[in-house]
Figure (tube, rainbow, N blue to C red):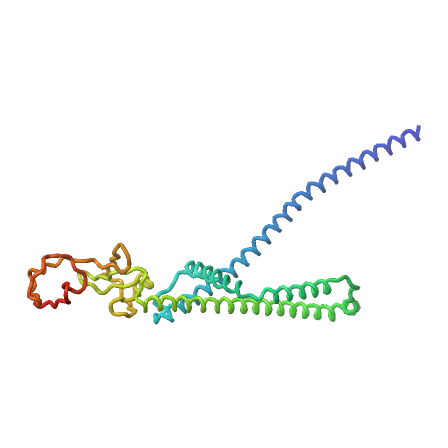
Length: 299
């Protein structure tokens, strides 16, 4: 009888143990699910933070390249860069254009055989450096044998030195990258200013625009750059680069080729010609000429 009771008690204890084990397993599984989700969320947050940091650095570098290019372009043309400020987004877009233009030229000028040889040497060095070897733990073992008040200051000092070296290297890389982009922006701005100056000096503006203030014609030429207060434009008649305030200015751009000039009707019967004969009314542009020689108008 006692043996039977003992067996029943052991069976009950065994069932209770199984129930407890099952419950703990379910709790562990339930706890592990949020931890897995939290791990994925942490990885996504870290990736987003890294991308934002990289985008910020790239935006700064592109803004710097665009600003240097625009400043160099205006300075080479004889304009004051501070009189024509650009918004931040325009500088970034201009920086992208500078990097694309100068990068394509640099890509064509790179000595690719030498680059391939350097890459092979660097690959071999990295393979040798990453080869498995027995770690040297003498310094770590020496530190672990020391007391806390001796070991911990050394560890903290080495950590600070590592962080300082990392910061200095990061600043040096940013400085090198900004210097390269600054040089690219300066080259691009200088080349663009030289192209514009050469084209204007040859008398071939892209589009002739008339500058009117009321009923007075200020001149005719090509607009270089504008903002809300000033207009920098090349006067095709006086062959100079002028800066005019926008107050009361009206821009008139004739349709057609850049060199087309609007002809006006002139009644030559009302004009005393030195050649001694009159001509019928017709359309003339610029100077008056007879079939034989140039006529001189006298009032």
